[in-house]
Image (cartoon, rainbow, N blue to C red; front, side, top):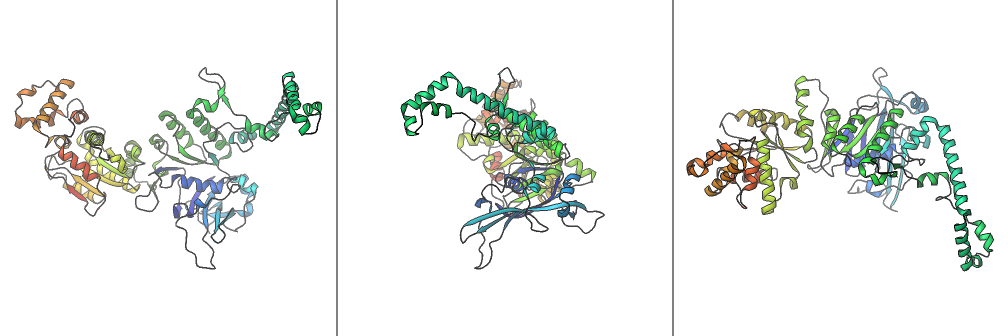
Length: 572
């Protein structure tokens, strides 16, 4: 099965959302922008148990609509158009099927290009007068409510935080076992119940239990219940929960015997084992049913390697995967067109996607996304710098000012610095427009920092960035990151810093013999040695010695958006 269109009306933070997913959907983006909301909306439609629970008032979009007297309060709804149903489901839902556009999920009147599918909608009605709620799932075409059997046919595989390998009736593992051989499984479960019943009878009949029951009867129970001691002892038995086999299956939990720890409960192994088994369980079930798989906060309980590996497995089957994640490793397992980045910094929750493309140049440029931008996906603002030296120097100064002077760091403003080049080579600046365009397409607020070591050479590049970015910052003329970290720092501080770097990194300098007028240039040159000493230099600066140019850059980066797109930092 595949969802071709998702439409939300007045559901939580979305007043309206129309979303056309790709084959898979990887939800990333800013916190509180709606990743979980979208997955919960899908659960309302595709989880048969969703309408068994009480409807939730918090599912209604706020502020509540003001409705004139006599008019109905607007419905909250979640609508999905589902295609690729498979022969079996199409036969079962024959009278409910419609011809849908395979791309948009909208109704189509062209049988040649359309595909068979079904439109289903979750509805939540609120009555302000008596403060009552009602919810149901219906077919969009007819308004007829789905039967339980039809909801089971269209159910998604939902991986939640519950323990995997559950044999209870609603467990994914139970369904997977039933698909293997339901008759044999039912016979085994019946036999299991009989065995537990006999074991409970044996327990009740044991001498120790019988003596304890007699003691209880002798201390008042036989008179309060108006029975003899023998009748009371004979009448006591033991069972699990409600006495049913289902109750027994809910009570037992899986154990795992690995790492020479013995057969201990799965929960005692920690979150990684449970998360890996839950995802593997869903993969096994989805391969059998070709289902839609829904998973929130993928990878939170996994190490990096496991997150990368299991994400790649989730993205391979013929089913459709909807997952949200904060883990950058997951991005490499999916096509960039599968990424849906959610933002809220504009005041309205938005979903940002890259449209499919056949342009070779654009496809090559999109490779930068998982390589360079992945770690910034949860941030609001993308700060682009030319290379790792810019990143390390600014990040170190930002942290130093946070620790020593209690200045809010870039991360407190939901900002992430990204280097366009993985090396200190000059090639990074030419990637800035590509990365800026990618970031803007994905809903980032984009800010770029440019060196000015060769005044005039980058005027065209700056103009291009101004057409893409929200803010472009240029360093003073003839200034790269090294001079920005040195210029304006007191002479004695520079000499002491150079001496420490010389001793710690064996630079081979005679620091005392360096003239004062050459000191700044010498330190600027030395910062590029040993693959870059920018971070080491900033860390060892004395408290309160903050390079004025680099500090001005940090202040400017944290300013609120304005109509000024290009700012040139002044000399100290």
